[in-house]
Amino acid sequence: MLISGMAYLIASHLTSLWLLALLIALAHATSGANWVLSTVYLQKHVPNPMQGRIFSSEWLIMTTINAGSILLASLTLEQRIFTLKQNIQLFALLEIGIALLWLFWAAPTYRFVKNS
Image (cartoon, rainbow, N blue to C red):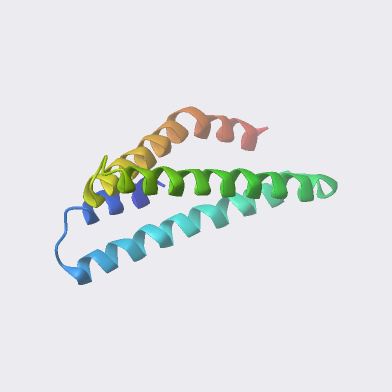
């Protein structure tokens, strides 16, 4: 998430279409890798009878947050609250902030679980 957010933040300042495309591809590749890793982690640590409930809950949360962020981004553009560049920067900074929060708050918990 951190790399994805930083790629979008850098991309918001670019004028070269090729560099922009490269950074967007990097952002989506790292985001996809993050999702795969989290899914593998869940498959390894969630009992089989619970996996359907856990994965459907994860999908619900992800879809809701995705829809909410799209709605918020489109409203800020439609109402001319932010420009497209400012919107990209705002959401990139939000993603970086969430990644840092996860890294320093939740990640140490996973190290504890793994060693148990």
